[in-house]
Image (tube, rainbow, N blue to C red; front, side, top):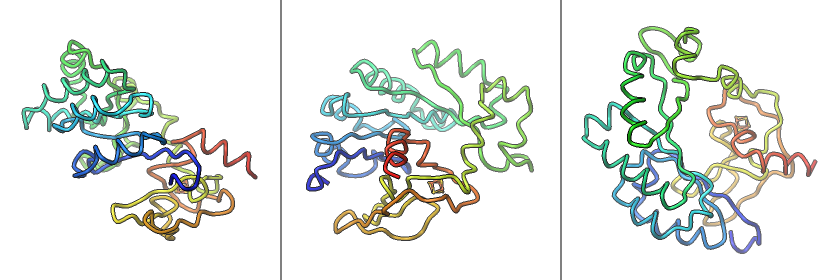
Length: 230
Ligand code: SF4
């Protein structure tokens, strides 16, 4: 990456990036020249070292997935809260997001009060899947949309077929074996991070009926840059 002379943004996403044995080493090396972002459940014991060793201005964001039930079940609420406040205190752009799982509606006030008191403001993202025989996000009622604070227009972002996209042009996904693909939907291998990557010569037209990770929206800067190159 350094040899290209370009600046990269490397987004570490789920599974759980902090389970990667050398994530701190990788983050340290990458942030010398490049930028990173992280999606994490924020309960790893490595967060403290991360917060101390990595410069916040090289971390575009840390999205902390707030799993209410799991944190309770595994007695990790205080770990999550402590890590969140530590990162925030050190100037990281950290924010919490929970999934608007339909049965949570009855406990919304409880969640908001508990985490709010601890200094954690969180938002909800739509649940995508089947619950109680109903397909979501399509089955949210008006009342649920308003209670969870969901943005319904958000859903159209997952329907990208026919739209221009920078997948494979100046953005790509990398799997743990280093293999590089344009995105999670397009299975045409572009190379491997340990060898070479043959990026496309131009942005593409999205071929997928549904996209869970639209690269043309998740990094607007790179998408705009791709459009300007046409
Ligand atoms: S599936 Fe998503 S990331 Fe892939 S080309 Fe379509 S919009 Fe872009």
